[in-house]
Length: 315
Image (cartoon, rainbow, N blue to C red; front, side, top):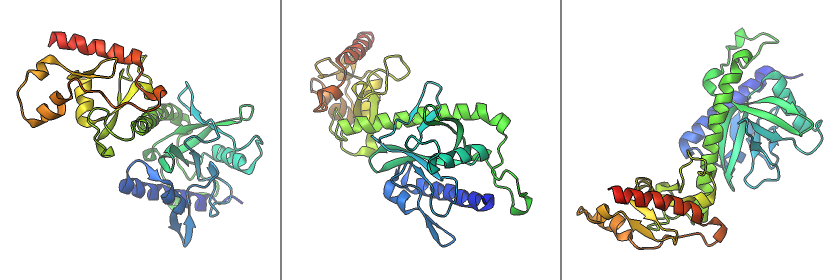
């Protein structure tokens, strides 16, 4: 028989542990930490396994987490409706893992979603809910919520058939649609950053700075524009200073990948930062990925350079 009280206590402990780990490590958690997990009433509770749908031994029926591995075998994806469509395990709708997610949907039990941004590095998203099941497409629809909208009643207030996770189903949907869409954007930005930094070997394309904490994935064409897709060829790895200088058109990049500094900036007389970090880049060539397919798209560079030239003329 499904023990709601036990199930809810384990999940609450897992959520609290994730709060602690993200405070310690930041948004991305190492897989080794997730595999080690936490101790609950003397039992070790890992949060992930080689399978994408994972139920630790301490839980009997409903999985604790679902995982999308970077470059994994399953095509889990956010679609145009902004929902996450998570693939079944295998092709049998009655596989225990798939049945477990179906039970989570029916009982409205929250799960954890681990999004792989790079081998061995995952962003945890919680709570998430199974919102729909499509056996024909072998997928579940997943929505994201926030912990502030869940509550765990006191033990003596829970009835035999009570809903341990107090959520108002009639009012949840619009909120979850919004939160899921925002999560989709955040995860895509993190993926874009990881792929761009990897392509540039984690160094600034302008100054070769290698401290990852000081690097950004800069868009050539802003992501607010139709051409500003989050793909490597629309990005460059830049340190914070040069990202801002590029965005503000202090610096431009010609289609031959040579840097130009705006004329009025070249004419300024300031301290060593301006002289060495900005003016000193003039007529130098940017670092580009070895793989030609990952290099800045020449057409996008041309579009951005034209904007830089217009700003130079108006300065």
